[in-house]
Amino acid sequence: MSRGAIATRAGLKDHLTRTMDKIRQYKDLSMTAELDNDLATDTELLKQRYQKFIKASDQVRWTLQSTNATEEQIEQDYSAVAEVEEEMRMVLVLAKNKNDEYKLQLDTDFQDQQIKDELKRDEDRNKCRIAELQKEWSSPDAKDITNITALLTFIRDQVDAAERFS
Image 1 (cartoon, rainbow, N blue to C red):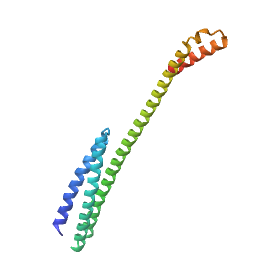
Image 2: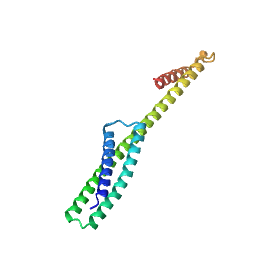
Image 3: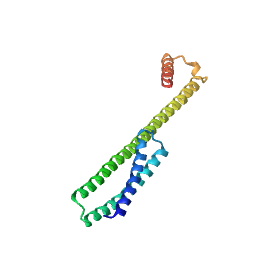
């Protein structure tokens, strides 16, 4: 059996393991834009290393088959590769979940900001309306109110404006 192919794959598995461990560390972190970019970079690196690992595994399998290895050796090799594949899937799911969590956080922050902006616009509009009403009612024409209906309308408008303001 070729020790070169096995050694190459073992080295690649070590690289894969280190990269997967690095990605697992994101699990307990609160995501930021910088961490999200780092996670994307690490995930891409993991995928590239995984492809190299698969190619090396194919070479090891070919070597095992060409050297007439026992069924047990071939089965052990398949099991080892399957373990790495399962671990890889779990790490990629973790990375996707963290990415989705960050996107949701951004969406929530954006929606919160939109609501705050809308409330601010409403507040500014109300302040302008109150100022307009005060200006209108403080004009010389408004001081000559003798009609009770107009006076009640004035009071109602002032109360409405005060309620909108608060």
